[in-house]
Amino acid sequence: MEITIKPAALSQFKQIDFKENEGIRIEAVFVGSCSIAAEHSLKIDHKRDDDDLFNVYGIPVLISKASQEQLRDKVAIDYNPKMGYKLSSDEEVYQYNLHLTRAE
Image (tube, rainbow, N blue to C red):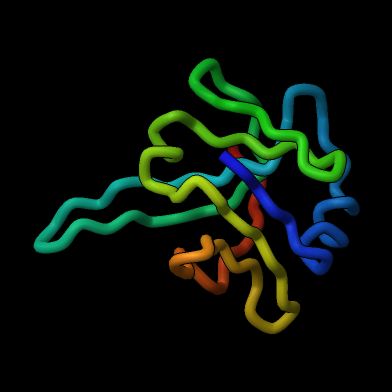
């Protein structure tokens, strides 16, 4: 999987004081109903056993194997102060207006 962090998002992420084994988690959770869809989120979280760790410009990015199944091979994160974070691929925008939270 290839992860791109756009300059505006990178600037935001570089302000975070990551603790040991922490990173930005990209999560894609399958939601079943009449259609097939996934809900996406970004959060600061600890690495889990089923996560792959990607180091992107010095930023640790965590994605579980299950989330990777819901995402394309290339994923980008961008940031706009008025619209929050945007998670996308070359083929689609997964979600706008994402907020970075810290996992509990």
